Amino acid sequence: MTLPLVEQFQYGLDAPICLTWELTYACNLACVHCLSSSGRRDPRELTTAECRAVIDELERMQVFYVNIGGGEPTVRPDFWDLVDYATAHRVGVKFSTNGIKITPERAESLAASDYVDVQISLTKSVARARTPPRCARCRTWRRPGSRASRSRWW
Ligand code: SF4
Image (cartoon, rainbow, N blue to C red; front, side, top):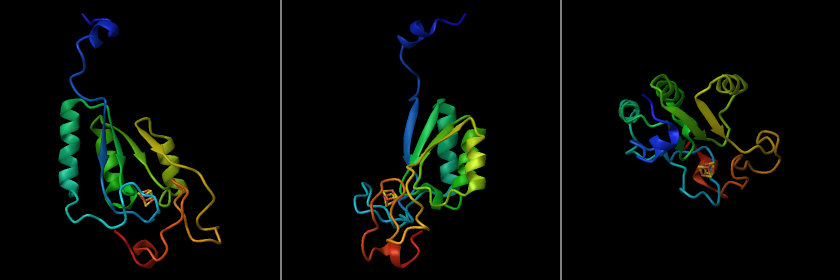
């Protein structure tokens, strides 16, 4: 017999409801106020196989969802595969993005998913801005002369 929710909660939870995961420090912007000083990829970043192993562990623990940030997680070439892998293993995904790499097609597929939430700030298009690009999420300008404005960063 299943206990009513109120009674189940009095025993606490077996696993966290949500975990936060800074998947990468790589970022395609370089905001002045970035809390994680993101820009260049950390060479110790987890490999795809290691990330999948983390997801497997989350599934075993029955973690409800993982909150992915960074850095800009979408600059990882395996990011969408990892999202698919997580949702296929019953780990929901919420991720924060500056939106630069979200195409209309990607936005449509995300909107159709019941297990993926996206956190993004909407501001004017970087492509249309006459001023230097700024972060779509935090609305600040790139650091002048920053690495990200001179070369690839991931
Ligand atoms: S987009 Fe986000 S992670 Fe990238 S530099 Fe700006 S605040 Fe940092």
